Length: 254
Image (cartoon, rainbow, N blue to C red; front, side, top):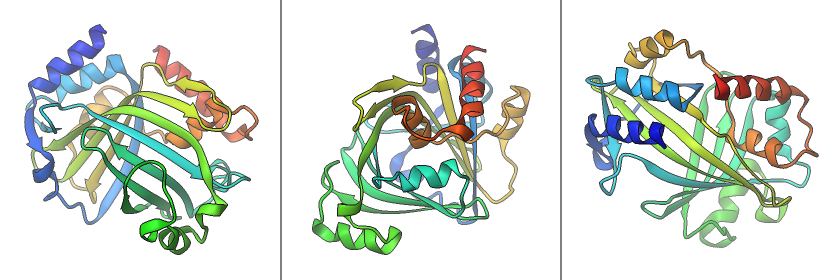
């Protein structure tokens, strides 16, 4: 709780930027890089970010709440594509922005150059149906219909979004990630782990990269779907993720 209070206090000191203002920040030649750390180091990062970043706020809060449900085939096609390091690979999810109640059916595609593209359509809630073109959307993007996929893992988490003063990058910081497996009924969470994703315009200078280097935080992939799946369904093939889990435990306890 002490760390959470310190995080809240540090966010209060960052200049605010609204969701509407965020829409003007278009990163056309975007590169995405993920990092994993813990809450103690996040406090230090936010201290070092003072005077360099805006914090996005909505409904008077600088911490947003998300819910995401991932869908997969009976043979876990999307999970296995990631496990086997296949590229291109895809994921299907339904994401709800809990503070605004906006919900989207999304398809994420990562190509063999490491670039990720996201396509989405608005839906009424987490229980997607074939109405309003959802079936056609899935057939076009993943060549599957609703009869071919089902919900597997749901997560909920908090997110902080920072924008540098030059407005050439966005930094999303996710923490308090909790998983619920829709098939096994098992629950899990990542404890003090924090997942950071830097989205910037090409290779322009990034203040946070200097901060991350000083804090000795190195790039590290993290898939909420895959990590949530192996933490809540031990029957899944997970050979290539075992070393990742060992590394994550070390980061959480450091």
